[in-house]
Image (cartoon, rainbow, N blue to C red; front, side, top):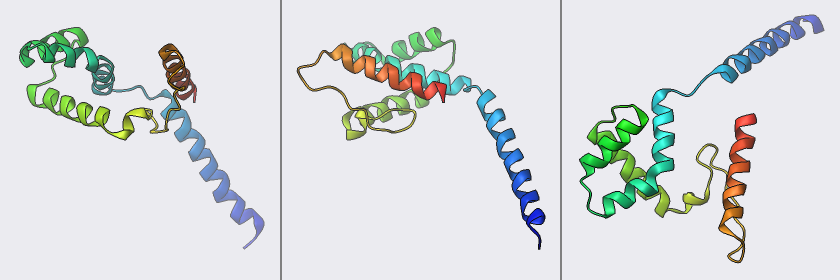
Length: 128
């Protein structure tokens, strides 16, 4: 077996990997993924309305209207349950997208600094 025989499959694999990267870079999140991301972002507000005694059906209807979707009651309840569990766990200080721990500033620092750090981390992930 010569060096050229080994190099040919490597070049072919490299070309396939590059093509895969280009295709995945073009991939857009599905409507469901976008709806879930919006749900996670709005969770504190949704939970606040639920805590005031507003019927869950009304909260879900408002959410569906906002995101122009039709999340069924079962799915909405599952998302609520999972988000509550996540926020109560130690994983709540990790990035949703990559799971990397977020190092928030100490207690004396402004909460806005933590928000800035999270925004910078998210922006970095989107650029990759």
